[in-house]
Image (cartoon, rainbow, N blue to C red; front, side, top):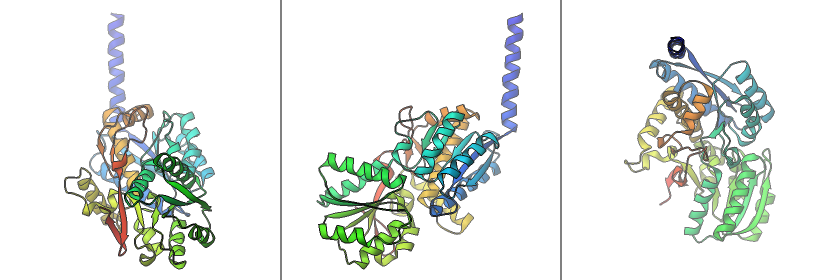
Length: 379
């Protein structure tokens, strides 16, 4: 009889908990660089998360659970990101955090979420964020070695062997530089120049003049705006005809705007499919979702959706998929994210595992060439 009573009490307790969750709210934290040099990343991420939360709540939430986005502006500052992550967890009681926008911020926040056991879905690309895999840490941009490999594969097709590197000295640039050098060595390319620049540098003619004298087959610039836009202008000003490749860190129209269509003409880079969905084959599994996201974003904010906002979209789908599959608790959400399989989203088709907390491969990117101020698919 005692056992029967215990079982009944447990059943009532579980039903009560389910009812509480159904009537309650799941808080999603957001850490985005809405202002500062990385605002071109953080602003569309913030807007996208807010838009998707509003859309979900308008439809009754996820399995009856309403969502609330609690978002803070980090300004791209790692110290501030750590402070705000702590605030989200301890004061706001979020169940999961999306962001930060940059690699440096994300690496700084990781110890906080690991200690507090709250899942983090970073919107930054640095491979060290999820390699090696950490229990509570995921990210949605494809690993930078995937983008690096796309560039080198294109260079191999063009028989370009001698590479000049020009990378920014922040977390994103340092990680990209490391991956490029490792992959180049394995694939038989020669690094003939290895130059760097600071995130706040406003002129790179000295590095480019040195590179011009070495006569490489191609130049690879790895960074996020405004630096790459400055470099693109400098290349044009110096009359350098060497093919210029950029990283996926500039895969938005903002880069073309900053560099100028004339200077950016012919620049190639790996880009997520959002930038070029209108020229993709109609049977591509992402096309429908990409079109719907772009149209919804344009309707809400009067501008096209960007690849960077897509990182927050991916995180939202991973979170809501986990809510449906596993439940609203922090550990349930973490487990549900890790179980994501063949999840079609903006940045690609995600399949996570205990050993892979990024879940994307080479198919996440297409090589594009800037042609007359717009993207063109490299065949």
